[in-house]
Length: 326
Length: 312
Image (cartoon, rainbow over all chains, first blue to last red; front, side, top):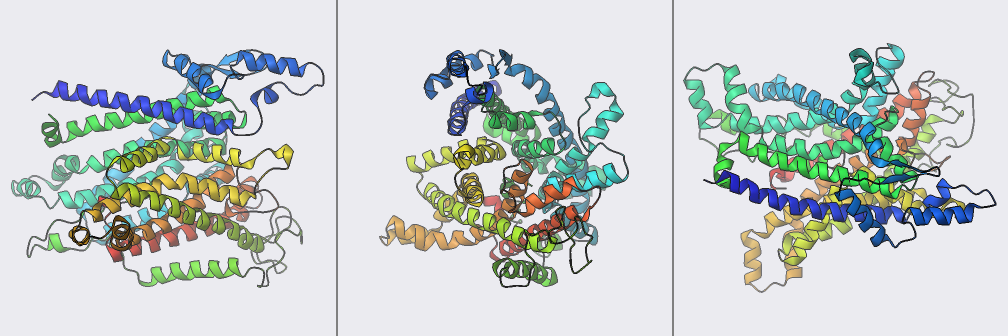
């Protein structure tokens, strides 16, 4: 048994994976966005008929835009690895990309965190109920509702909810964002509809997954054993069946955080929430190559690290995998 | 709902081997063994109706979708406007039909294109387990590491061309290409998993022992077996493409006015929801019914052909 060694070698593989993803994803994205017509210097320094040509040339030089793409990318990557995310292009000087990330990332992060918490808090009890009452009307109602929820686009849910609870009842905000600092009530009012809309689809996916895993687990011998020892159904379900059934769910949660980034972009634009989604959209439109590279790199790194965490959690949840790995 | 949902729907546990008379083991799985029944026929009827309406829209007695015919935001059912009129006094029913034509063209063609490329690459990468498969697989993984919507937005911006130089392609072509490119790695990965499962079966070994060439094995032995899984993913993919078009519409990356799509209609309806909420509810309901029908038929195919997602 050499758990530490196994973990280290896994860590090594992940690090290599991380660097490959980092290089290819950022280079690919910036190559793609460089193909978009419209140069950054033309957007930053408008045509005014006099000195804009020299200003633009100066701007290109200052921001490495006169260099070929691979060199430009390499210079950015070198700085990024040492912790400098570069500057956004602007006429007056430069504002660091890291400032934007500092403002926007926590907002998107909170949205995703809330969404996952809400989704799990609702889907786990529902899945247990549906698996326990497998094939009764309870199960059928829950499964049918989940199927319907899968067919509802999150933006449509967001719009409909903001109509009923925002426009009609006035309970929630239909636009804008309040940080926690503005008070808990205001904060919750501003994120309630986006979070519910984003979590609905997740609830359906998680519920269906966990339910079918639980149905299989409940047929195992150790469950029969636990039942025959007279342990209550509640304890059997929550303590004995849930843990071995939650592995697929865990993988999917990891994958889904990646998908949620897309959903979050749409919802942030829909509700004018100043998160990463809005920043990424603005960076694409404004040809902010450096900023976009940094955003995409951050997301990719986050995604790879998250999946590493999921791998690690496997071994915590299921001792059988721990032993096999060692 | 997002493109990756295709990967994560519910991996039906294959079901443990029957434990004899134990009714637990042989019971039907309520969520997966949904009967086709009335709901299935309703789904077919709805999609059939849609297909007829959008294909024959020019022959059917619809009003002009772009003409301002009456007062803005006319309520449904008045003056012969069955579903009312939008903020510019244009017939909502006609706009739904012509917008639906665009939405469906975009989703059908992008998925067909995605399947031609992604399905082929997936077959190759699942069959050849040497460097070809490895290179292709890492290519899919890398494309999947970029958030799909970021990729889609970048592609739309690239393909749109320079507006000052008269722009480029038809916005519908742009959306078809964009969604096709985004769907390729997803479709390829799913096809690859299914191919890998079939490629290990005895009949493939038997065919090879008889001297069948790779091409024959791929297209005559494996491909017909992978097809049901692909049909299921195709229906799901169409549903996802309709939703994705809506997401792009919210980000302002869909068709240009006066042309419309369901996504664009939802965005327009949202802006007037305080005065005329039907303008947003009607297109949302249409999208919901269509996506629901596609998902339902996809599930029916999956059950029928016993596509095992746990193997995907």
